[in-house]
Length: 563
Image (cartoon, rainbow, N blue to C red; front, top):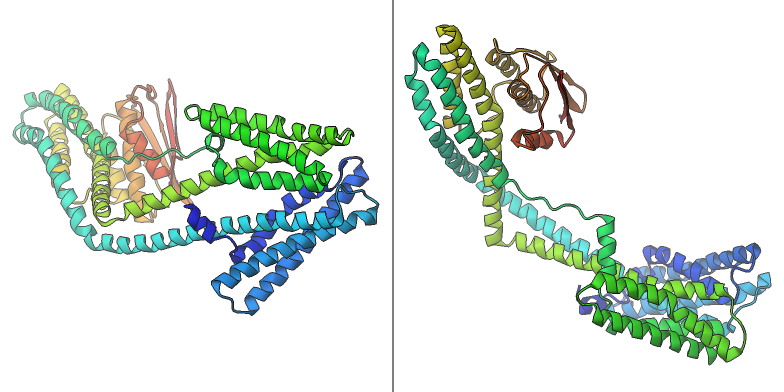
């Protein structure tokens, strides 16, 4: 967000709203402990100052409530609203100062400054704090409004997408089907002419070669080249490193930090000792920040880390040493704690806010660029291409290749036994699979699930004993079609990779998902296949909720498909 936009938000009603009040409570209670030279002298003293901090924040909250009531009851122009908000923030800070100035006397506690100084400093510091908080909250509101506007614009484009969806999908499907038909033409011709028993072994090899040389590379091309690249989510550690690495905009930050340091020192130690102390601390802060910000342009994380350490260790002790030199009195270490911690913490909070604003600005820019008309049209075309080709890859891998592999193994056994009837059935199975691959127009999930379960068992008959148990009612249909496709993938892998002779599949359904358990007696997965299409597809349909356990006595697959 540009500076002009942020400045325009200063004095907006969010400055005296509930969120700003709640966010001011921690800093208000902590600041209360700066009203004495020895805030941590004893447990009763700590509890007393804590109570004073709470009561002071309640006083501030009462003024904010009154200010909100005035804004609601009367009509103000934009300028008068801003001025009213700032005046309310100043009065609220002053009321907090009154509480902090007078309440210590009730408990017999000593303070570091006179009552007028305490009231004035609280009015200035908390007015600034509330106004900045309100501007930040207003910026967040603007961001949400911008996102909502973009969401509405995206919804409009989605309606446009629905209007052109059918034509684009048909176009992409036609192109993809043509590539599949081209890849399967040679083997389809060979299967159409091969009928003799002597050809069975040769045809089995041709089918297996077609799978390895044509269909598998094509399905991998469809799946892996068109799959979208997902950005890994940023971890908290990454965000922290980025915040620490953010350069401090010292031209804007240092004047405000100087005002706060001098004001806090004057309140604590009075005039002129507090002024000298705050000035020394401000000069040291400015020197450290400017030096390390200018020198650390290349290795920003290292230089900024050293800068924050020095900000913690140098300015506050120097300020206290100045007070001790000017007054000739030793100061307690506890007095120095809040000031020492506050300086680097304030800069870190500012850097974190800057990082968040930068991210949000980039998000809005990306969204706006993404829905710009030329970019949007290209994006829609790419989305359709990815969807069609990933569906085609799953169709080729899970259905066509599985059926062709089963047919080729059936042909091998028929050739070894001279079984013409079995060979004819296997050839017909292969021809049906190739015809389905080259003529389909929608890349379906296959036949109805019950029929597909029967086809799976029949396709591997004589090669492996496949038993599939499923409920009597298979609804919803789409989820069960996906489940049947997953079952065929698991059975094919068990026979192909594990050389299983027995595969048992148990399908169960509950209110939320279809649960499938597959057991086989093969040699288990070797792990050499890696993360292929099948594994990626299984992760997609299950949301990652599937597992494969292998041993020398077989493999077990468990998956859960949401309904």
